[in-house]
Length: 162
Image (cartoon, rainbow, N blue to C red; front, side):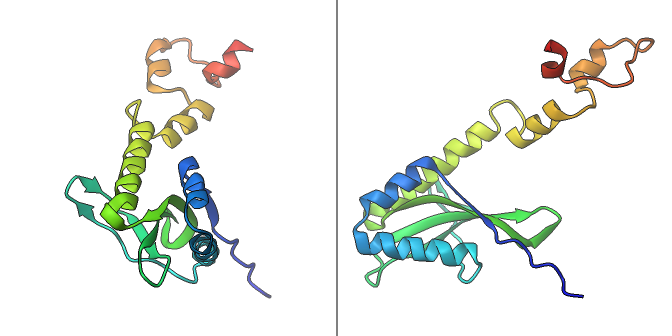
């Protein structure tokens, strides 16, 4: 019996990173698209970036896009929580010139914005979404429910409004 093939990792991008691709020279854009294809197929992997002064790029990786190493592609990898060796996807953060560390400044700002959005309400957005769609009551709902009148199924706020 042949084992089922693993699906290819996904691709996502910061909206402004897609605009970055339009601002770089055509030959650099072609190389960036080729590298993105190879990254998704797990054929290449760039070196890890670190915290650089006020620029926190921990967890991000870079790819050199041209022979002069003047342009960089900065991305992050999404890994399966149960198996970190399994690549779920590539997230493009920034594409641009290395001169004056511009691409790294841009990438650090975008990563910071994403972190603030994800933890804006005290817990990561993916956990908030899971709680909202869960049939189990949230801690606030459980506290509001009296112990003698516990419903068989607790509905999410959206379901109760219908």
